[in-house]
Length: 305
Image (cartoon, rainbow, N blue to C red; front, side, top):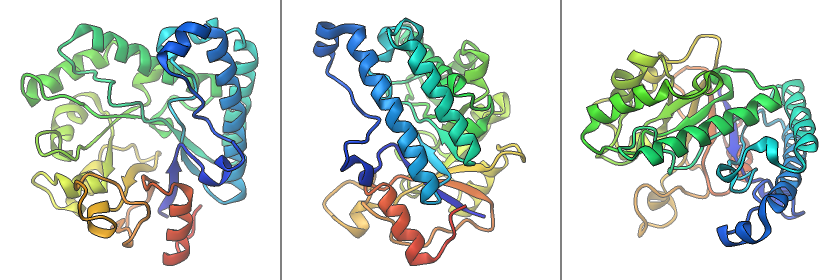
């Protein structure tokens, strides 16, 4: 059965200042240092537990965690945080709750992570960042499989697509095993970048790395396949024991504001999602977050399991 989840921010809980996005600008980090980062991270993780509880009470079993849980984490080792012992205990508790409640938790690190970059400094920072995401999942006790997906884009075409994909394959092998075991790639919304078939031939065929099919990105950049064919090609990349992960959003320019670019996401979902009979986990990337999921389920009478 198709299952819907949401990403990072819970609007209802944010009214009560429950959030996992407490952060600071770089200047504040330099002024207040790792102790303040540790304090913010501790509070973010406490609220992650509250979000997991809310999800359980509201029958949501798919949730993308925020990459902002640890502010400026690329600037330090997690184990060096003054509150690391408390943090590790709370993360373990959050993971235990997620497993108990049958919740699938994922990450989607930011666009500055470019594993295929021609700049070695960027590659080094990307490897560090991705490994830290896996470290968080390890501390939570989440499985070292694509069920606990860490989703990224290729994010560059420097030197041509084929050379980029070759660099990605080489640098993928430099990631820690627990990172490699979770990494998945997503099709792009720009015509110059990667459609599903590009990722299938250039990455999955070499690394067995699954493809997260993004419906909206495919609408923007379909490549040579129609929606069903692209979704089914992506489905072939997922192990039969792990539910296929997808992203879905409606185009803001079609339903809410025709003046914006076609890549912009709408606040809500406006059409029924066609899963073509496949069993999918779909992260809804609507601006209204959990409210968009709830409204969609009410409107289309889907059951969220």
